[in-house]
Image 1 (spheres, rainbow, N blue to C red):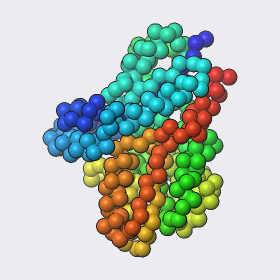
Image 2: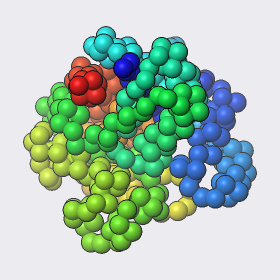
Image 3: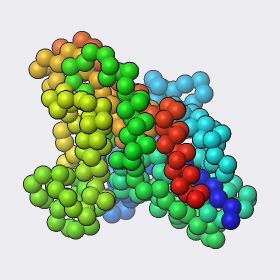
Image 4: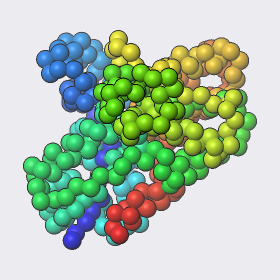
Length: 337
């Protein structure tokens, strides 16, 4: 039986031009797992409240991080694909949930090679309906349409997988070995309603005291609980004292309640209360992108320095780190057994 691997990340505009950014934002925000309201409300919000002004603002942000090779997210993901391909014996394809390289193209390539079974590795360590779930469901939908006999096996969220944690600690080690006052873990935020929707028990997430620390079947699909689990495992392995780290959530959109505390406000508060040397890690992202390079590395840095801080360091994402390639390789090896 012919096997293969498909890596899927979020995606990026094809260029930092306003029209390309508009197309990307339209596709992204019209996804019912990202903006999870009924279609008519979603259409009105996207087309009348967001798209008239947001593409120009976002295009400016993308222009600030764009490289001669293209989007950092796509460039890095392609490099990861190539390095993993050199380590495994089966074909490795790459796709983005939104825009290019497309899932349709990847599935078509795999089908043309006679692939009967594919391991889908979402490049999202934690389960969230707006990232992991939408990528998985889209690949299944496309595969059913373009290659109905192809079996899709899905890599489970690996937020506390030993290999992923080893890679995280290895990535951060050189920064942790330097003097720092505080380590902030910044995870991409999601609306609180999505946490509640993903609660298979219907009565645990954000409804019981210390819900993320209390064992529950809900944690299998709870993004918030999985983020905290990653942090607990990381600081234990890396030996980071409890008093020297905290967790926050970034990139909120709209007026509905999102997971708190918010990263931008936390960064400002840390500077105001005397933290001078701040490290920031973004474990929910395996590749540096707009949300890490621009939102944290540029705007977050400015916020911290204006609040009184003196040394702001963004720890790079896993990107092409050898331990991350090794973690992916081991996922593939388990698939091939």
